[in-house]
Length: 256
Image 1 (cartoon, rainbow, N blue to C red):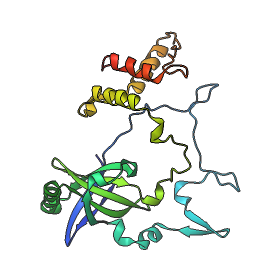
Image 2 (image 1 turned 135 degrees about the horizontal axis):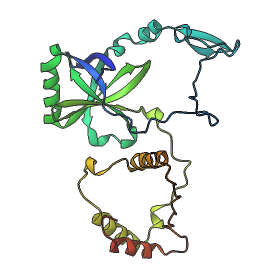
Image 3 (image 1 turned 30 degrees about the vertical axis):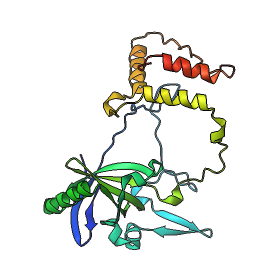
Image 4 (image 1 turned 90 degrees about the vertical axis):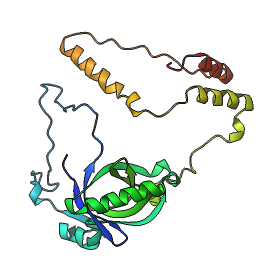
């Protein structure tokens, strides 16, 4: 793995030099865009809007349109705004992880200590384990400030980027049914269905079946096999009684 950021975690007066690694990888198939006529690759070019000519990466700058005029920003400008946050994740609070709504979670990363940071890294990890808390802090990554939480898991410190409150949309405009719309008998049966399907979370149980089937379709097409269009089964009908659906669900096997 290649580190995407190097810096330090600020833990009180303790500094922990660390490297940051992406904890996830894309499971999508690598599909190329082709011309329908001759299957030639489609390429994107960075073109000057005024001249129509292609612009090289080293000739491109970033700018902000302020009152009709562009203010050009350099790498040094981005870094000078909050220089300390480009190299330091300062933990300002320790909270219960259960207090953070899953709506705020964004992207996970692995944290690895530099050689000089091994002991303080282990110290923070064990302190988080013992208290059951997670650390909250902010830092700048790719010219944007991020709110993050740091948690201990096994021998690892995991950093999760989480959203700021003003990044979460208000849901007041949605038309949602009230709790009074639910009948007591239906709720009792729905609760029984939940209990029937309940079990411990096992991440290995869930696979990306769509990509697997798409790959199989690609292989079949390569062999010249005809692809048949599947028939969709109607699961829900407006005329079907909700209680009847619940009873049928409870009567089916858990694996279904």
